[in-house]
Image 1 (cartoon, rainbow, N blue to C red):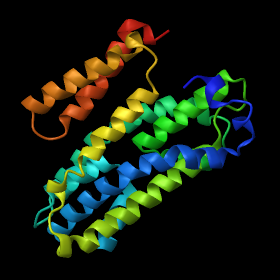
Image 2 (image 1 turned 135 degrees about the horizontal axis):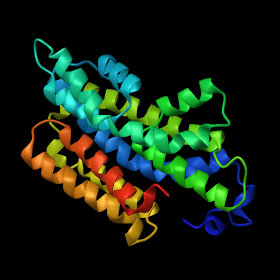
Image 3 (image 1 turned 45 degrees about the horizontal axis):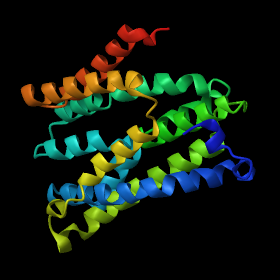
Length: 243
């Protein structure tokens, strides 16, 4: 979204936290069904609602949580689950590196909290908003009020709805056939559309997509996440991203 559109004269008076609420609410419509599906799957593996809420609250990364629940067994394969969680969450290293320059003016404690609350959606909103502020000549570009409002809304919705999904699972059964997991794809399509700046800039996305898809078909586990991320970074560097 162009800076002049995001920060029109009338919109400039709106407090950043209110703008964050406006931008985040539509995204939460996708969070709820995905969280319910995760909760239902976790309940089928024997996890209680409080146990699942503790896991999702501390980890806050849906992809790795689905992998962990899928691997859940008795006895629990702790080493395997930890390894796969680290692998699937490896993308957060790159996301954190992209966000870090915008956090330089924050105290270390607040910067670490911002990174701890970072999920794909919060990262995308935070990056887009910071870039729009920078293009509009606002300093600092990163607005803690905007970012933390959006991130906390996402975190609280995710944790509470995963717990709700686990709590109601005994009464509603498996809710995956309802198609709720399609919200995952819908959210990421919206994020990609919001960050679209032309085909040239999107080429690393395409390389990452093809690499991840091919790896998913050839190798078991979450290796496709790491391969896709590294392929995207490498292609961006090769096409001049290092500049």
